[in-house]
Length: 199
Image (cartoon, rainbow, N blue to C red; front, side, top):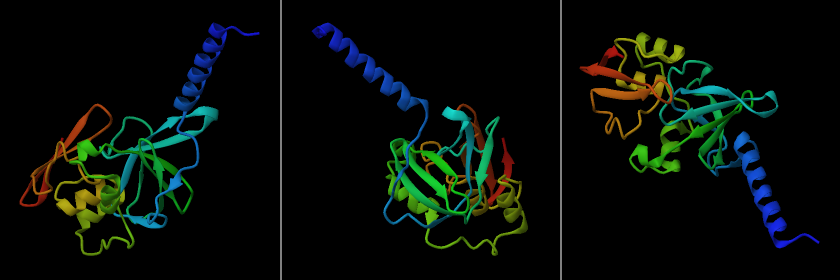
């Protein structure tokens, strides 16, 4: 008959084992967010890929935008239809055209206390975004997922997403801060409402 010490050791081992399995990959099927099961992206979503268990690839995006990760960069175009799911680190986006699952990291504290639902109302909507009224430079940058000199603030927002509020408190600011990856920031400078510098 196992002793109390043996049972305790077995319990600790099981907890550690399940913890490691849980950390090995995101896994699981996300629970849908009610009201966000068939919505359109209001801006491009940028992110990076990483290898997961079983040779699978995971797609990671963030409120920080990760606009130019060093490797594995991807972006999902504006007006792509998605379904939103619940995820402990933020939420998930599932593309309805190809079922690609994206884990979206979200920190309310870095977005001025905005709830997940409030943020979702910024980056998704029931209708597609009309791009026809934007300049040719804006449309080119949006299509390529880049910020180009001469783009408007709206063009940049659609191309790279909303900048994190703890670094860019207002879209009226003339310097917007994004993240190239987890460690390196990029700034977009405006003059008279148009991009003059990206660095």
